[in-house]
Length: 439
Image (tube, rainbow, N blue to C red; front, side, top):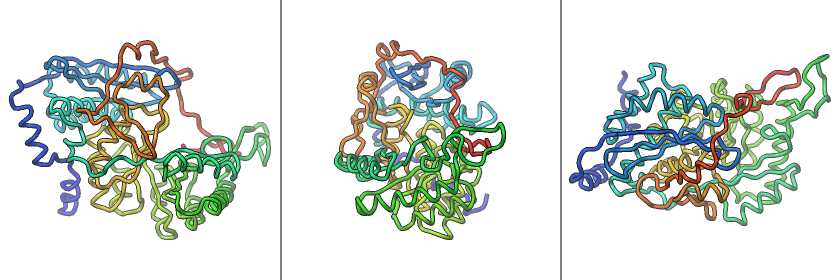
């Protein structure tokens, strides 16, 4: 390994500062050694459209356990099978204090590593182990990671509208609720809104696809004028975000980024699919519109070249998709070295355990930029005592030891996870010729 590469990886390693390490040792020195005595899967629908899978790891110390999330909305049953038949039997008898060693060994135990399901399983174990370590020490996880680098974790709100006027109205609601960072989506049709040709219209092949058809050039022509209108009405004080959701390709992505530059975006999210990340270099050469990417990344070599070459401004990984707190902290440390910020993706179908895992990394990292919000319904707040709370644009944890939240298994049991119909596949858009659009 070259000296440059060695320094890069050495500096990125997540180390517990000496003071925090001594505090943990002092607090646990009188306690007997512990082992993992059991682990089991807890799954639930969350009383809604969720597909949540958790791992509860129990130890030889009475009452001491940890909770981790194996969030995968589209393959929950595969994750459950992997946890129950592969990880859990392997975990029994291990020392839960050895998080880094268990993380490395667990990643290699499947031989093929860095796949989405393997990372989900790894993340569930990792979060639960950090939860155990924090509880045993009587400290929140962020204190074990170096302590607070921020007073709280800023989050961005989600808004949008079918018209430019509705976009401004929804933005004003977020601003009135204390948010300074707001994501604005436009039109109908979900992601890609503003770029859809109505069903049956346009030049269609005989007997071909007749549904809503996504058109890249239409999207490039539509979205910049929306933000021109929003800026004209709301000014430049709000920090605006827009999610392209990987719908662009090649130079269309470059042109969209160029046209959005006058509107001073906080960032544009996933303007390209991971298969076309080399085009981020072209974007850098032509404009200064900040770029965020990584929601569907699972392998370190997807985000590593983008960070070390400073081709993006924010890393958007999901904590459960990239292997848990241990790897997420390494990513944050690497971002700090290269002047890139984090914007971890914990909204949408993600769960409260996921949300708080990233919260602890964010709070302890000077590379933190923003985190995605997630407004959970009242029932979910009952299910997860100690759940994080969003107030005036900031996410606050409970301050309790470990991750700071728990699962009420009696309530969860009333809302079992139902295997998704049709396999639970992600719904994709199509172009006018029937081609699948990458999400």
